[in-house]
Length: 303
Length: 264
Ligand SMILES: Nc1ncnc2c1ncn2[C@@H]1O[C@H](COP(=O)(O)OP(=O)(O)O)[C@@H](O)[C@H]1O
Ligand SMILES: [Mg+2]
Image (cartoon, rainbow over all chains, first blue to last red; front, side, top):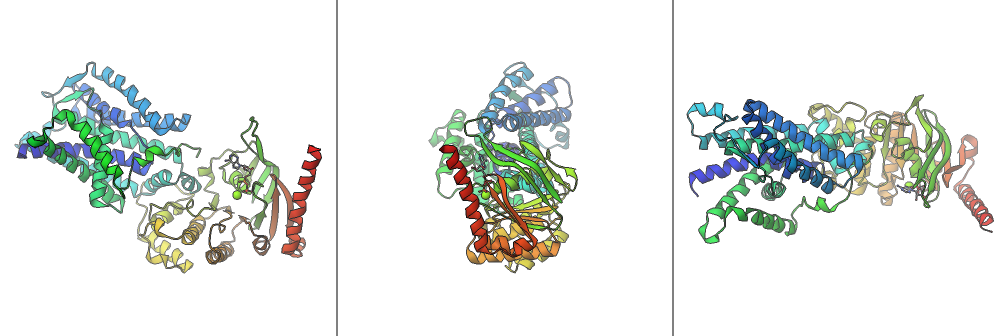
């Protein structure tokens, strides 16, 4: 693997680390199997790209993208809590709606922002090449976001959120407003995913309507890979595992694509990921986030 | 003081399966009183506790705690005034969280859950001291996952969690029923000790007539969503387990008779 390819994999892995942390919050912390991310990742990219092309400065555009992602998470949580629609279905509804919304925001199936200013532009002045600056930028951002999330989950409020996901009845008996916690957690989760989408678009110079396909499986793959390797006990290590898992997953993908003898092309990626995640889930002893998909326990019961 | 006024809880209202689990019950528990509750399966004991805690919404009547009408407060809000221990030891705690994290969740009951780190030196010291009271050695295992503990240990921690912060009433729903006899005795003694120490107003559901008479100063028997017996003072002191079983049987037979009348 060339250095350029390795740096590229690192960069994408770090950005998808944000997605993995988002997926960790919905699947692991809230026990809320959420597919909204397939829509909120391109939503973040769309808002950031359209914003930048519309003349908004890249930092504000990214902030808008994060807010839009949070809103998407709130919609899914609302459908589940207010109307009792099953988690999965609620998130599929939001994801489907987001496809149209993302098209509206972009005005076309893809937007190029390769020549536009981005959040990385100010740092390119330091004389480092884009290929080096992007992974460094990605690292700082994902570690910063991860540290904030880990810190939050160790606070009184964050413990309330974890209880709301793990044992809602106990949480309510201890005074945790479980519905409010679910709203907040879902907003946080999708805001992080949209943040990832916004950064991805700016680092790669485009937003595309199809870029969200498979986001959830990639996120799950990262979470599972990280957990398999680190076997985290505490929250801090669990977040580290998400980031590490995401990076390693990208390297594995890069390796598979580079190895001529396997004969894969980028289009085969989703198949490969789905197969890998499936194997990880079937493996005995693997703690398994998709098991949550089979459960019908509503975190949306009255609080 | 906690008061239920004409409390009514109906399940599956408006369907052929309509089930009146609490039929306009009046119950007032003065501050500091310990009430034991007995009754056959399905009598409405858990529903009574759920009505007080806010888990079962009232179809009629109201709940007052020290003159405050809390009828419309959801369970999570009532938790500042009401604490409880469930029958199932798995329900009272989060098995994926550590012992100290579980205690921290309970330590924030009744207060604002701020985004400030839950576990500092002060809280850890407090938890260690509280756990040491149990005599189970848990004070050295603050960082262990709750799931590593036995059912009895978990129930003891649940009880500690329920009494960690003040409450106007403590609700115990057959909290020793799922435990082996030794752990059951242990948790009962702990209950007694904590209630005495903190002068807690308590409502304890039990399946044991013996416990119902041994604990507290008042015993209530529920039957088909109604209060069938409510004894305290000298009358209760004179009751033996046999008398209580007798009364229990009589209450049941009477309702069987009236059912027979209806059917004939
Ligand atoms: N969640 C529920 N949904 C429907 N019916 C219920 C529910 N909970 C309790 N019931 C019914 O209400 C009645 C009282 O139940 P419960 O209060 O659990 O009795 P106990 O605790 O005295 O055994 C029973 O007939 C029971 O079947
Ligand atoms: Mg019961």
